[in-house]
Image (cartoon, rainbow, N blue to C red; front, top):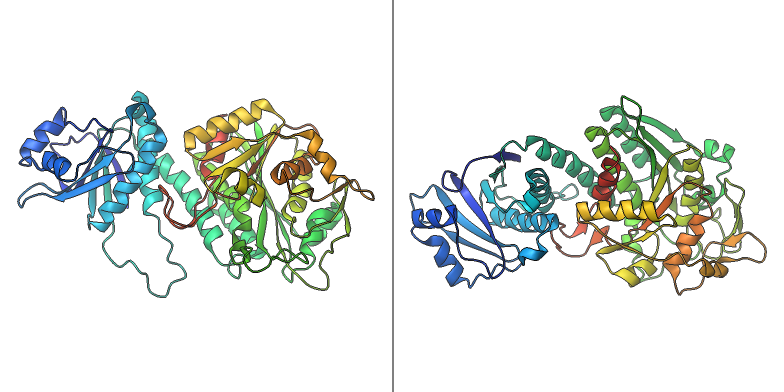
Length: 492
């Protein structure tokens, strides 16, 4: 699919489908829209009246135009209230348009939506992102693709000529999101610790990143007892992935992004039972997938920031070698951990990854993890939890999320709750009481960061969608990639 920025007007554009955005309760045609409607024998006004189109956000309407017209179909899309108009409105609206255009067998699509905040660059990027994310399909594991109809081949963003760089940036970011979606969606017999390491190597080779893959013996030398405690039961070797992007000149900052990488989580000896969602536990590497997706995008965008992408990747399985409830593990910073629940394994892998990252002397660390069901209970499926003892870093992530449209909510790190993690025989337990479970998980991770500004993102809910939601179809969403990229670019 080709996305082009063009100064072609509504009156001059020709093709299969022409999409026009209208605000809620403001569906009276103005300017060129009036002239276009006259040119199309009143088809647009007729569509508004017949469909009782009110411009509510997410609403659409379509009509076929009479023979001989330079435009075959008109598509209306509602933008909601003008005062609530955001970049995210553009992304979601244009995703709806693109899907509808595909159903209507439009190979060429023209899009005429308002420019957000007098900023054509961000408008063009948001539109290009929305089209691509909305039309994404993953048919890798089907012998016969369900959709054999014509695809949208060309999209013209009308009134946005000269914004080729913004579209290119959207393409690069979308490529990272697609990688994350593909990794999360793939079955656990396809995406393993080995294939995750191979994927990282491919990114490094294609985009010129440095790569280091620590094998089990390397992790043993570094004392990564928490990570290796989880990995013991798997027949597949663990892989500790460290990708590095370095700009050509002196970097403005050095950052580390860590992703939880459990390619399958059985729960270990505290095995997940029927109805616990064990069949979806291929998604437990959603943090690592977003980290690799961000690496792919950032390597193409080339900001003036050095970024380290880290993931301790393994499976959490069951065997005679498995860690047991009651075992004590020693992390690479010397902290001892009493394992009271083998199904709280992700924080154990992150513990050693955090210690490793801080030794790199970076300016800030962000970890991303499908860490707790408690966060899903608190915030639902669409919103991720943000935890940080550093207000400045938390504000950076919040600003980045507003740009990307991915939703985060900052939750407190109530130090008193750490009492629930105290152990009588070790420095701490790996889980606390059920109440405040996402907070105690964040407090556990905090024990493995000494001084570096650090934020923890609990993305357990938004990495997967059970049904179509905005520009996300059912399945893996690639959540987190665009916020991470926006955060890194804000320093470049």
